[in-house]
Picture 1 (cartoon, rainbow, N blue to C red):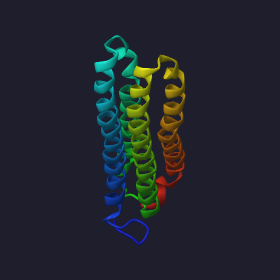
Picture 2: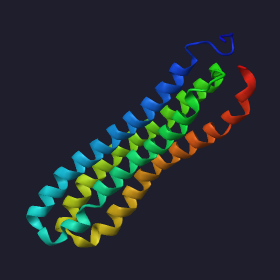
Picture 3: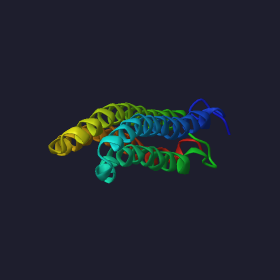
Length: 165
């Protein structure tokens, strides 16, 4: 039953939250992987013995897509409710998806750029490995902050279950 609080188009915004969480997080992860992968291959020419340690930016970029996946699953479990979805809850779902998605996108850009330059520098000076890892941790935590905010937003949506029925 549609009402002003629970219109029929309300689940659309929740679905857009799912889409934005997974798509934007995967864009960030893929950019970080591609950009740092170029540096890894260039560094592998100079120091093939350090290739395994040079894969760290690629692994850290891949974690960003997991952040988006976790939030997308959380949102998708709540999007389609039999009694309807309140519009306010759908907007929270959309905001949570954007929170993790845009944070992971920004973190992927940072990891890609730092990873590219970092593995090239590491190939020339192995003592720079710890500095590269620390900078990438600070970049990775941007995506983690977005996921934490998204999960905090989603934790308040359980109180609105009886608004449409």
